[in-house]
Length: 161
Ligand code: FES
Ligand code: FES
Image 1 (cartoon, rainbow, N blue to C red):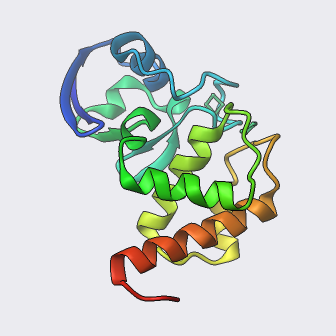
Image 2 (cartoon, rainbow, N blue to C red):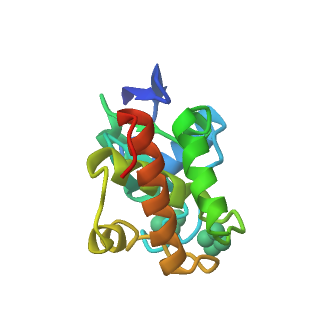
């Protein structure tokens, strides 16, 4: 089937069997390797992309579902100012990162703050439930998200919180 969608802000078209995983399309057809092929069963979060505004496991999304969707991978997101804000927040708390699921943590943070600018601890915990990170202390991740939320709020609204 022929599938049109928006990838990192650009209209793209790909030919694929309906059941091929999004992660394989990103790698095979677009040379995007930032979404890591970890468990491939939806358990680890290493393959996370932003899919229609939500952080999703690209290993669980079949090709037929991406038609007319909007997908952001870490390659596209890393070109934004918001990416730098998130990296700054992670660095401020010395969040451990081996790189395996770092893109997943970054994109989960972006998707969360886009929907909930000032999330509660429970909302943060729920948001990261799908990421199985061996490097990051969850308390540090919560601290980082709160810092990033504050930075973003000040940038958008020009005030301290
Ligand atoms: S590779 Fe997709 S969740 Fe692990
Ligand atoms: S960054 Fe998550 S496992 Fe290392």
